[in-house]
Each structure stands twice: as C-alpha cells, then as structure tokens.
Length: 168
Image (cartoon, rainbow, N blue to C red; front, side, top):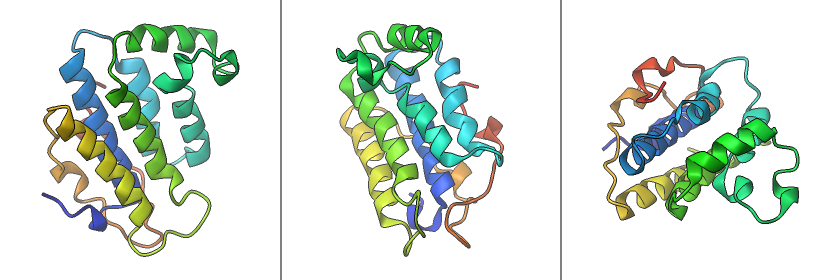
C-alpha cells in the first residue's frame, strides 16, 4: 500500500474520489453518476478555488439534499437538487460518509499552513478507506496518485483526471 503521508492533499482528495466512484459503481452501477463526479473532479483544475469547490460538493452531499430541513438546500439549484435526490435513493449512509470525508480532506488545512504531513487530512482519507473496507467494496489502486508528491505547501498541483476516473 502507498504511504499517503508522501502524497499531496490534492492527491489524497483524488484517491478519496476514486474510492467514492468505486463505491457508487459497486452499489448502484446503473445510475448516471457523471454529473456528481464532474463536480468532484473539478478539484483537479488549476483555476478552481478550493473553498468554492467544497461549497459545490457540500451542496450535493446526501445529508444536505435529503434533509427534512429546507434550509439545508435552499441555495441549491433545483435541477441539481432533483438530480441528487434521484441519485441517492436507497443509497446507504456510508456513501454520505465517504463524500463528507472527501470534503474534510480539503477543509482540514484550508485556511492555514499544512503542518507536518497534513495529519488531519490523512485521518479523513483513512475514514474513507475504513468505510470502503467495512462495506466490502474493493479499494482502487493507489498507484496513479502516488506521483502526486507532498512537496512545497503540501497541497499539490493540478492533474489530469482521465487516468484516475472510472466514470468521466
């Protein structure tokens, strides 16, 4: 297994998204996942502000769009809301935990300097891996993200999603 301490924050997010794709395709292979994962994979681009990305993803979390409290989704585009609600029908809570943990990887050091190897982000990635294992879903090969080294500020640079995504 790859030592995720050596992988950038963006690489950890990418691996989390790869896990989410694996989970989605394993549990509900016939659903149209592309719209959700297009938003998730936006983190790969250089011109994306991470806090805006996190906000877009949070608007699509199952806990938000399936909430009984309309304030949780009042700012979400009605079309996006409808797509996500249909997508998440019958989806186990584990999927929400995976998506929330992906956001947590980004949020761990969002407004500060990444200390050490980014322990909080690493813990959130471990949460994703733990859910996958508990649900009996095969983990994706981490080799494609291994080259995304934890250097400079630890956040990592943009990357091409084509070799990482099973859905796009």
